[in-house]
Length: 457
Ligand code: SAH
Ligand code: SF4
Image: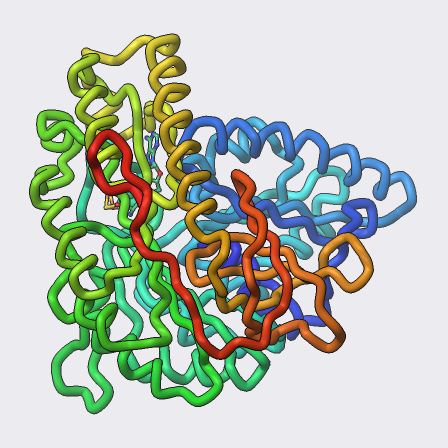
């Protein structure tokens, strides 16, 4: 979502004459768009700010200004602290106010002019009542694979998570606005759209004719009608919000890719309860069974947290058992990180860092084995690949399979932005390679590898 938000900031600033530079020394304005989800991300903000400060001072010695801004969830959560620790920062604004960038920037520039030595910072970390999306200009950036935010915020309050405090309450954009933006992205060249939300399947946007609300499944069916839009994805979903309509969309909508990121966090019911996830492992497995019935070739991914307060060895073993049982195509995993202001931070049964580290290693080894097994099961099949970037070598292109795997292939110009059929010859831990093939017959991967008697693919 930060990638999407940064893009929208570029759109807002383009209307003021700004363009993007890769070289910080050239920047009149530098914006750090930040993430607060784990402590590590937060620490990175302060080290990056130190580097930007050097550029700012160099520019100053050449009589040039550099406005430094911190945006996103660290700004939202730690705005005052940033201004205290890094007084050279000119602007701090949260994820809900970036549509006000022109006013903030004007204010920051006035402040720099009137305090030549040290500008006084501008802080805007409100949750404004006016919907930010209504005030954003349409993007002019052409992307083969584009993000589209449909939902923001979260009302679930998992005890480890800072999102409800930094992104605010759940909000869904009206269906009409989402369709308008999707059409616009397709007109600019998008073949694939990933619908975004902190809790995207909790989507409940105002219906097209102002009659009630639509869920994500219905929205996906409507988006699939857009001519030229070949692929749809959505992320991130909560298991509790996988309703029947959405599961059926996986059965009925060919544009909806057979890959789903459905985080479970832990395989222990005791820990799931302490996390306030509001469901059991049994429920999660039932949802997955339903998804596999609706779309037999669907592949899954998840997030896992190890070392949540009170997690004993037995709980961790249950997480490994769940992973064995489900069989993932990939997954993200993290050591539990204490977030100030969340209930988890106040729990007195915190797990030792070394225990967290060794559990993470064991879990990641298992996930890596499953990922490689999944990638290997694709060898010898033909996959549709959306070529979205050039490779390092002449004539080499990179793209994504329906399962989000990175695929390398040699193709002729102009192939960028095309969906091509690729016969997969090689599987690596994080990628596939193959050659173009003209076959119209798609051979998709089917669950095949057995692990400890469980289905893995
Ligand atoms: N809404 C999604 C997750 C969004 S946050 C969901 O409910 O699943 C993305 C991921 O970051 C989470 O799935 C979780 O695995 C991880 N995460 C969030 N807070 C964390 C914390 N305090 N420590 C470690 N990982 C965390
Ligand atoms: Fe955070 Fe996701 Fe839980 Fe919401 S549902 S509190 S975003 S982990």
